Amino acid sequence: MTQPFVAFPCSSELRTETEKLIINLHAGVDEPQRQLAMSTIDLLIEDLLNGFLLNLIEVLEMKNFMAKLVRSTAGTINKAGTSIASASLKKMDNLQLRPMGEHVAGLMLDVEVEGDVQPWMGVPVTDGLSTEIKALLAGLRGETPSEYIPVAMGVLDQLTDQAVEVYINDSVRLLEVGIVLRKMAGAATSAVKGAMRLMLKKTLPDLDDNQLRALADYIDHLHITDGEPVKIIEVA
Image (cartoon, rainbow, N blue to C red; front, side):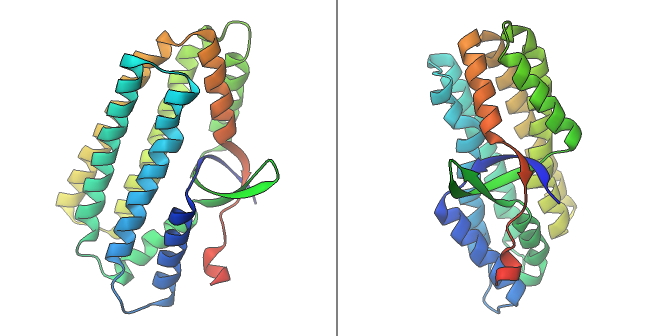
C-alpha cells in the first residue's frame, strides 16, 4: 500500500548510518547505540534543513533579507532539534531506543529520479493534504500565482506541523521521556513552528510570479505520491 509523502533527498552517509542503527537495535547488540543515534540525528537535521529550507535560497534566487531570514530559521530549527535530541538520548539504553529506530525506518524511502533510485527521507501526509498540495501547485502555475499565496501559507503551515509531529513529537513519545524532557520538547516544537510561520509570513508575499512558479516546481519535486518505506529490517 502506497503512502503520499513530502520528502527530501538524503546523503548516502545518512542512509548508511540510519540502516546501521536500525539493524543494530533490531539485532539486540550489547554495545550502546546512543552515540550512533545522535550522529544519525545530526545528519538527518542537516539533510532535512537543506531539502526543505536552505535549497530554496538558490531555487528562488533569494537575496539579502529573504536569504538571511531563511538561514536564521534553519538555525533555530537546528538548535531546537539538536538540543532535544541530545537531552533525550544521553541516558537511553538500546531497548529504549529501538521503538524510535523502527519509527525512523518507516520514514526512509527509495525514490526514482530520472531512472536513478535515490535514498530519501519523508514526512507522510494524508490523502487530503496531498490533494491540497496538488491544487496549490496548479494555482501557482496558473496565470495569477500571487492569488494563491494565502493557500501556500496554509499548506506549508500544515506541512510544518506534520514534520514537527513526525520528527519531534512522535520520537519523544516513543522514547517515553519524563516530564522535564516533554516540556523541553514542547518548547522546541513551539520554536520551530514559530520560526517557520514568521519566515513564511515575511517571504511568501514578496515573491514574484516567476519565484512562485519555481516554488511550485520545487514542492512538486518533493511531493511523492506513491512512496513506500524501505524494508531495512527484513533485509537485515
